[in-house]
Image (cartoon, rainbow, N blue to C red):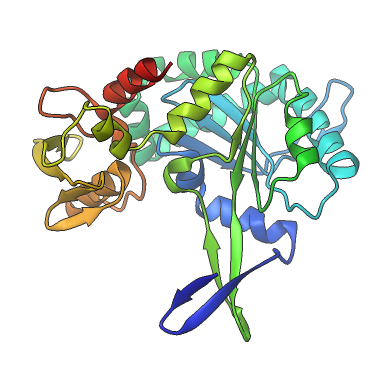
Length: 308
């Protein structure tokens, strides 16, 4: 239950699959991550011409991987609805025609939208190499990305049987008690999946562990200190970049420009928006450096190695 101004919001089911699909489209970068390109529904076909329409596709430029996105509600049967639908999508997504469509869409987006162009630049992809890198990404097996309102045991077991990777994100709906038209939606913090499968057990543990690490963990491990100064460089693409300073709190929060945030990503977004940008997401782990000049992501890797 969520409470605000004496109002109570209780968790309720989504009215339809379309409702959760709309939530995903409107909040794609928050759900999947700051380095993602998201494409809504596109018709794709299997080799014999059977058509299927996934809810979307997402390309992770930073990690060089791509997702078939299928938003679902838990009221749908795993074996009667989700499994056969996703199986058809996997087959269709591996067709050369599908891969050409996705690469062309991504290249066009980069050419027409400067913010998308910035995503490629942040991922160290030069403008001349965009199509080449995209071809390399799409040549890999897709990952099934599924925002869903609850994860059943059947869904978890099905995900672990597939020969492709699966990531599940929890998206929940809350309605005001006594006023069902007043609605809030809960989406994951820092694009954190509730379930992530990989091709082998060691990789699975590494992937899940990465999402479980917080700055508080780094403090406990002695990799960063409360009160330590962090720096972030940001500015217009063609202008001079400015260095911003944040301070690590005892609880792992970051204070910057007079505000305190529970995560590095929220702190980084606030810095960016303070310059007039309308950008809503950024990867905080690759935005902030510690006093020794290391990215938070590098400190996270050190923490994971120490924990093994």
